[in-house]
Length: 227
Image (tube, rainbow, N blue to C red; front, side, top):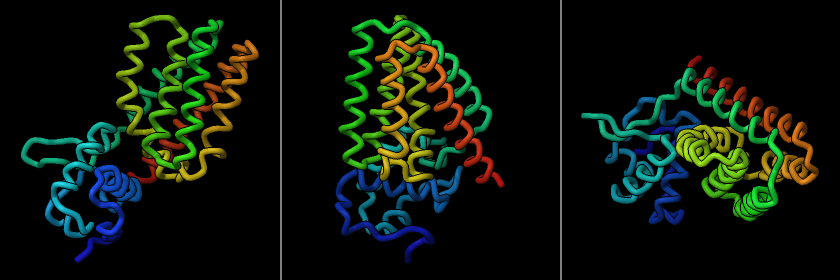
């Protein structure tokens, strides 16, 4: 018997961990699987029409984006979002990225930003959330690298492991990955253009607006879930 909100995916390339992971993400974001809920392998695998091994592979992928975590005596459970952690993370992100955008961009860093944007464009054509999310993060990493500090760049890379969680929530909550031209590419194109124009003030303003908008969307999303 299938659980509410869960459909059989045995006929949808269910042998791949990516398909299983994407299905689980949708169930988490739509709250068919709720925060703190254990992922019971036997019942989930049966409901999805897949093997337990396939399910485990999908769960391992979700661990990387922190949508799923392992707890003692409970196994894999859906991560519980923490508004305080979200706020702390986004305050840090806001300071780092706006400061980086205010700096003069060297030819080398501008080339790195261009490469990251071109990769985002290629990823967008796939309409695959995971590819787009990682390409999006790589572009923001290239912006932070403009500070010229390996310590700060390394710190932001570690932050990126947490940001994947929140980027994933936004991407699936609003189906951004299905309409990348509207939600993602246009905004980052404006940002790249500002760097090419040498307009650090506009670049900083665009970064701030982008981060603040996503921050508010995430707060609204998690507040609604708590409600």
